[in-house]
Length: 168
Image (cartoon, rainbow, N blue to C red):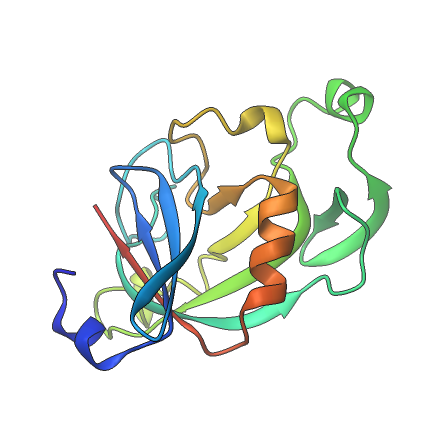
């Protein structure tokens, strides 16, 4: 871990942009890993950049408990739709947010918190997406995308307040 904060944190999520991997650490040991898809435009913190913000964050909210797998969210609200290939074909322009949302809040003032770099106000999430978009390559508009079964498993493993370290 490149950041000294990790030495003081025993339970956290590590998101590596280079390897497109999210690792859950419990008691300082890796216990679960998942493939992810970060931003197509790489790492960056600026509002409107469509980049994935680096640095320390926390899970500020867990959204979607009790919703079905592949439930569609718009503006952090379930629409009542369930994603299918047919729905995707009818709405090719939509940026699908599915199953669960883990909303991130930056912890580093000037880097990913406050002003034009605030991850919360950029609406940066860890969320489900159509599983076929998970091809091992960056492809999001800034969020961290996951397969639906994986984001459901992660959602059930962690609590609000868990720290998240995003790095290249």
